[in-house]
Length: 386
Image (cartoon, rainbow, N blue to C red):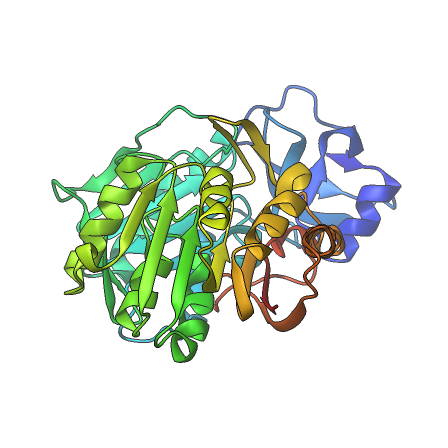
C-alpha cells in the first residue's frame, strides 16, 4: 500500500497512523484486519500495519520494518509495557497498555486488581485479541477475568457493557487500591468503571495540603478526590455530581476507607447550579476541584468544555476563599494547552480574581506519551492560588 509525500514525512518521524486521504494506491480489496506493508512516496518500505475499514485512520503501524504483526510481537510489546511501569505496591488500578505510546496502536489495557479490561479503537484490531489475551494471562498470574470493552464516547449516553474474553468476573466488581486507599470498581459491567487512573498523581500531590481545609469537589464522579481529601484530614468535603448513582458509590468508597460519609456533604446537582447556590449562601472553600467532562447533557442544556470552561472557572473563583486553591483540569484532546490557559484566564478576569499557577499536573508513569505522537498529551491540569 502506497502513501503520499505528507504521510511519508510523518511516518519517517515515527508517527503511527496513516490517514485514509493519505493512501495513494494499493488499498483495493483490502479488508479489516489485513496486515499491510506501507510503502512511502519514495518507494521505500515504511513498515507494517493493520488495515481498518472504519474511521479516518486507514492503517495503524505496528512496526517500522516489513516484518509480521503476530502473537509474538504482541506478547513482546505487552511484556515491555509492563516492565516500564514501576508502580507503587499500594496501587492496583493502572493502565497496562497505552496504545500508540506502548507500540500497540489502538489498544488500551487497564488492570483493575484481578480483572483486566481491553479497549480497541477499531474493530479491525480484533484479529490480535487471541494473542493479546494469552499474553495478559501469562503475565498477570492473579487475573480472574479479561473483558473487551467499548471505548467511552462522551457524546454517547448509552451504557454499553463489555464481553468476557476469558475467566469469571466477580459478581459485584472488584476492590482496588490507589496509594493505599480503597475503591470499588466495575470493569466491563458498563462503560464507566468508577475510577480515573490518569488523575492518580494529582490526588497524591494534594495530600500534604489537605489537613483542615474546606474542599469542594465538582463533577465528582464516584468521589476519588473526595476520599483522598477526607482521608488526609480535610475539615469538610462537599461532593457534587449530577448523578445520585455516582454519589451513592462515592459514599460507599468513603465507608470502604473507614470514613463516615455523614461527616461530609454529598449534593446531587448540576455543578454550575451548585456553585451559584453556594455563592449566594456565602460559602467559601480553601480548595475547589473542577475536572469537568468534555461534553455532557444536563438540566441547563448541553455542556462543552471548549465553550463553557471560562464560565466554570469564574463561578469557582466566586466561592474560593482568600488565598484558596483552584484545581482545574480537562482531558479533552481537542482543547490545546494554549486554549486551556486562555479559557482559565478569561474566567479569572471575569470574576475579578487574579490567579497564580502553583503546579501543573501531568499523567502518571503508566500513561506515557511518545514524542512522535503528540495526540497522546491530552491532559491539562493547573493548580492555581487565588
